[in-house]
Length: 290
Ligand code: G1P
Image 1 (tube, helix red, strand yellow):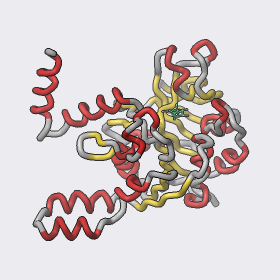
Image 2 (image 1 turned 180 degrees about the vertical axis):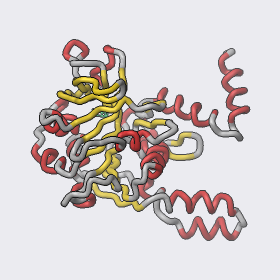
Image 3 (image 1 turned 90 degrees about the vertical axis):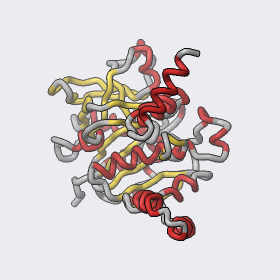
Image 4 (image 1 turned 120 degrees about the vertical axis):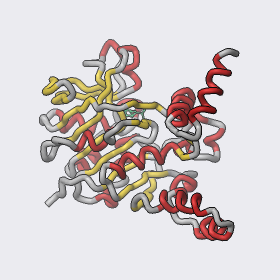
């Protein structure tokens, strides 16, 4: 019997990060910092805060630094102990103890749907979450937990956000009927439609809860937009059966997949840090006069 509790999550992190070249030649884009933590940690923390215990990273060549970040480092711990840096030692250990992390490889860049499928054996016959590292959501209640609430058994749930019509070609777009002001019964989904072809302006943000029977759908999904195996297309087959809900989550979303979005997130989270708020405000005031 499939288990419908969501205890495991897939993090597709195999992308090359071309928008951040040249730094991403040697540094995975997921470890680029927001203040003093890698981007991916904000997304992992969201999943952990929602009760997710097992994390599966779908990686590629060159992503060791990302996986290592969540693994114990005996040398570093010995160094910090020797020098009496207990506070830093606690912080380093806390990251490692956040959750169980395993990494699987996507050997060919065949698309997001294909990347998620690589986690099949690691997850097994369970409902699971998918969190995309480029989308960071700051919210009181973790966005992925908002998707788990009131989920009918066997349904997929995707996070939705209204976007300007001119931006539909950047997102998966959902159409359906609003069951409540924040919940859509999704009838159809299309990956990155041109504005004139978009059935609505409700875009999928990178948070999904997927039922255990997604695996065979992913395996059967043929290449779509851009010649890639799209997660949106695999979920669309469930939408056709009335088994997809969209949730307009509450929270602030940052697209850290581009340079300005990453800077914006950095400033946002720095302003939330009591030790940084005043100097960062002073810096912003000084720079706005240039
Ligand atoms: C992916 C998905 C897309 C979704 C988006 C959210 O696209 O394919 O459906 O709307 O993430 O960020 P990507 O941004 O990886 O091209």
